[in-house]
Amino acid sequence: MVGAGLFCIGLYMIVSKHNAIQILIGIELILNAAILNLVAFGKYDRINNGGQMFALFAIVLAAATTAVALAIILNVYKQYKTIDPGQVDNLKD
Image 1 (cartoon, helix red, strand yellow):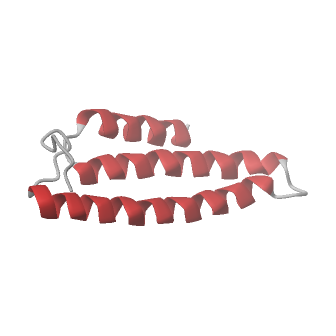
Image 2 (image 1 turned 60 degrees about the vertical axis):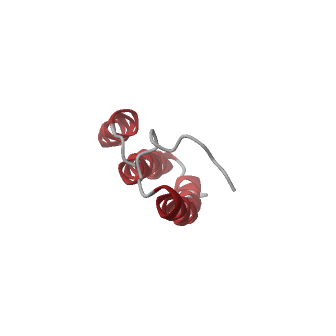
């Protein structure tokens, strides 16, 4: 139930916000919901600990994705002076 709640909150943030940072936070909430479900369902695989291993991999992947996304957002802000994805209308060199 907690994972489903986190997923719904993250999805709402992605759909309703006009700020790139808040959209990134929504994506992170969705990833955290998936990680929480992996750990919860890992209870049924006590021998191989597959849920915990997938969760650890997802945490590392989320950290790398966040670093790349923040770098892209900073470069967009440097060029357009806004972080609203709706105002970025073209991508020039």
